[in-house]
Amino acid sequence: MKIKFSYILALALSVGIGWWMYSGTIVIGGQADAANAVPPPAERRDNTEEKLFRVRVSTISAQPRQAVLEIRGRTEEWARVVVKAETDARLVERPATEGVMTKAGQTLCVLDTGTRKARVLETKAMLAQAELDFSAATKLKTKGFTADNRVAALKASRDAAQARLEEAEQELGRTVIKSPIEGTIESPMAEIGAFLNSGDTCATIVDADPMLAIGQVSERNINDVRLGMAAKARLITGEVVEGKVRYISPSADPDTRTIRIEIELPNSDGKIRGGVTALTTIPLPVKPAHKINSSTLTLDDDGQVGVRIIDESNVVGFLPVKITGGDQDGLWITGLPESANVITVGHEYVIDGQEVEPVYVTAEAQ
Image (cartoon, rainbow, N blue to C red; front, side):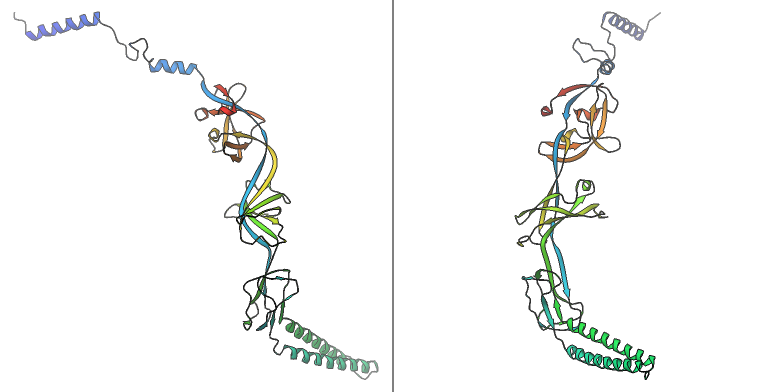
């Protein structure tokens, strides 16, 4: 019987593979084949689970700090009154000029009287006649020669004449336009020869002492501001003026969610001009605060800004904070206890309730 060559080859291969497996090194998947090789993933995971996650921690303490609230705005005059004509007439005289100070009651514009003086004279004569008629009727009534209704009618005529006289005198008085307040006359004024209708402007009077610095304060900071607080305004023109808070709006602007405040600035010399850009600073009451590096801040699941801390048992916790200011070397925050162990490195990789291994460093080494 003849044996096929393929059978002989298959037998030889089987014997060779068996001999190699018997005498060679067995390699097990997932295990290192050298003494200094990296351990397999399962072993590395087991070792990791046995060790706590290490974080860098700094113990920070509160410090007294006086925050300064900065408000950008502009200056505005204490009062601005637009003096308008109350009758229709041509401007014939203008005793005042632009840019000069005026007193309350000083004449600004004089209008043509027209027939107004004649109207006053006419109504005076009518009133005099009515007075005579009423007086005569009253005497006749006491003697029984005049009826009561006759006396009443003459009295009504006299009262009407008195009212017409007062109206005519007021109309004549409207031809002289006077300043209602003390202040500076602003340009432009009505020109001589111009016809002014009732409601047209004769002049604008500006009272700039005191001057106001107007600004908007965020609704988050408005509770720190009080009436009468000292303030300092630095104007773009170079002046630095000290004043005080005189007004805080009771409601916020619906568009910007800010509250208007006014700072009263003395301006007896008139050097401060209205409409000038101003940076106002208000020193706030001294409060305890903590200074941290901005990289220490994080967010919780609700989006609140805060820091992660550890307690005496090295368990992680989260405390929300409020940023009250900043310097070149860090941020000032409130909301922490007097002293707190704050995680400065590694806070992004831990969660509340997790136990960690702290590595303490000084605040300067953060």
